[in-house]
Image 1: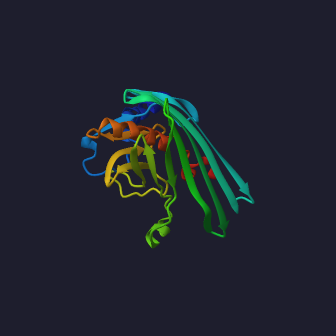
Image 2: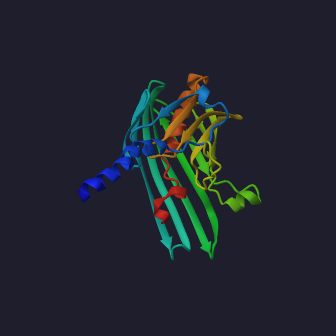
Image 3: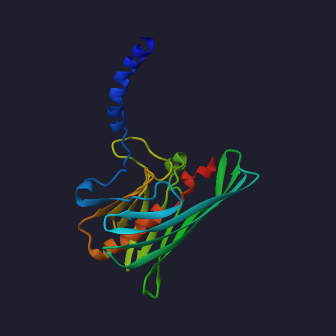
Length: 245
């Protein structure tokens, strides 16, 4: 009888569980006004927090690898982070298979509670296109804080550029979320721009990334922006590293 009463007392909570779980949605990065309405949302499947495997998103698929390491001398006095990643991409809008090899390095010296970065975080990818004689490149780094507020926030900002298939892109990290005043110190995602216009975004708020790509860009721009988005997605950023614990 007592056991039955206990079970009955749990029923209301069990009935509410699906409602609670449905309310737990994954955070989304801040996008330019109206960008949702003019972009395709490409959910990438297969990353799942893993270090290697097969991925796919609408019309495209490929393989990826990534790893990171941390070397500490009198840790945390002198810390060095490094990482490597790679990917291959084929698909409807990729005329030839694209392959990439990437490397990341960062060193930091800590004195008391102040951290100096004698060598800022640098991430570099070399992209190769089948049957092509030259390589394209993606560069991403940690820019110098532009003011007191930025230094106070201690955000791990990232800026970079990429040259892919004759298309030039600028990259800016995103630290804000849609519908929230919270600001992340580490990148929650990236905007990929041409000139002053955002042509694509990479969302990294879950174990699988999501790409947002403008519908009105030409096929040449889309072919160039997808490898850039993947290069950002496979990065094991030291700002999010479990090895820092």
